[in-house]
Length: 84
Image 1 (cartoon, rainbow, N blue to C red):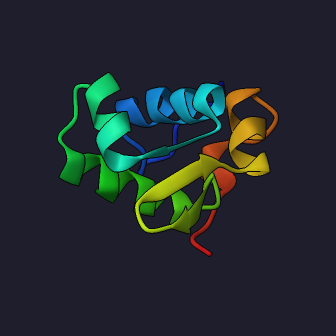
Image 2: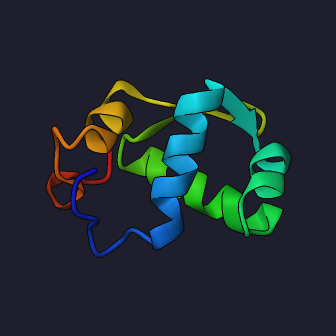
């Protein structure tokens, strides 16, 4: 994994890894697997989507993006990502 950016939180790496393993998930399912409330998961998913690391598929369903996979693989630095 790459170094986290100022806007990231430690749980973001876990959230991205979970989405990578599960392909896509809802806020509720993610919250059940992380020590976060549903509202916190929603906030983190929106922030990660703003930076291109996850993709919003509709309703409350998100999946990891190709850029998110590159981040987890250490191919891109989160500090280089800007809001889209």
